[in-house]
Length: 283
Image (cartoon, rainbow, N blue to C red; front, side, top):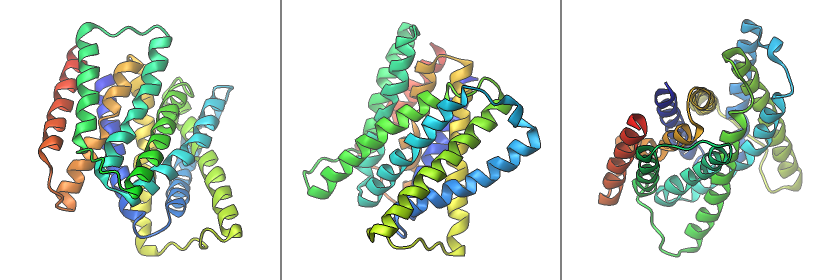
C-alpha cells in the first residue's frame, strides 16, 4: 500500500504542477496559489463537517499549521520558476526536496534494505534526468534554479510535517483542512501586502479559469493526503522517494498536451525512475 499511495502522490503532484505552471503564464503566481488553495479549503471544510473530523483535534495539528505556513512560500517560488522556465530546470530540481523527509526517516532510525537503497539512488537520478536538465547560464535560468531550490526545500519540509499531523483518515481530513486554512491566510496576507505596495495587481480571476484552479488546488491537497497515508503505512524513506517521481508525470503531460518532445536524456530518466520504483517496491 505504501508504494500505491506514494505513486498516486506522484501522479497528483505532477498533474497539479503542470496545471499550475500553465496558469502562472496567464495570471500572477500568488493569485494562482491563493485562489486554488481557497477552493480546496472550501471542499475540505465540507468534508470535515460531513465526517465529524473536528473530534480528532489535538496538538499534532501544529504540524499542519507549520506545513501551511511553509507551503505557500514553496508553491509561490515553484510557480514563479515554472513561469520563468524552462521546465527542464524547474521540474527535476523541484524533486530534490525529497532529501528532507528521507533524512528525517534515517534520523528516526529507518534503515532500508540493500535493494531499496539501490532503488532510492536510481530513482533520484532518474527523476533529475527526466526533466532534461539544462544549465546554459542565462540569467533567467539561474533565477529559476534558485527559486526551484527554495521550493524544493519547502516541499520536502511540508512532506515531513504533514506526515506527522494525523494518525487516521478522519484526522487526516482535519489536518489537511487546517493546513489549507493556514495556506490561504498566509498567501492572502502576502497578496494583500503586495497589492498595497503596488508590486502586485489586484487579483482578477475569470470564471473560465475556475475549473483549472479547482483542479490544481484539489490535486495538490489530494497528493498531500495520499503521501501522508503512504508515510503511515510504510517507511518514510521509501514513500518520499516514490512520491518524488512527479517530474516524470509533468514531463509526460507536457509531451501529451503541449506536444513538447522528450529528449533522449528525459526518456532515459523516465526509464531509470521506473527501474528505481521496481527496486523500491520489491525491496
